[in-house]
Length: 139
Image (cartoon, rainbow, N blue to C red):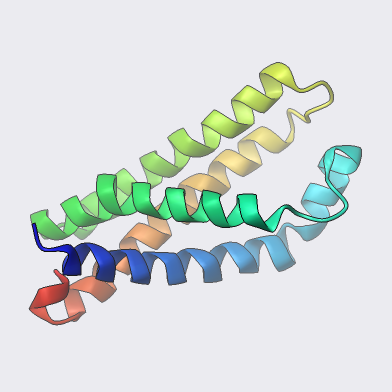
């Protein structure tokens, strides 16, 4: 197994994921999480934990969605499987938090599930398109 395509896909997906999620967290959803989570939020994010989450999430997208989509030459697969991956992973966090954290807002769950679905679908679709435009070694 040649690692170059995997690494190229990971690099593209990580860049796209960071840009899209930072726009969401830094602008669109800033007030949303502050308002809904209130005292549950830390004063400062744990950046180490965030980096580990991003690294694992992107690895999962590449392994389960992006690389198979490139092998199938299917942008549709990238979008649909990416969206489902995002839904499942974000549901894990949101529904577990709703089940075990006192005060976790139920009103945040559908918003976050929609965001996770959109985020993973868009990262997968864009990464698929970019990867297909790269030289053959990256596919």
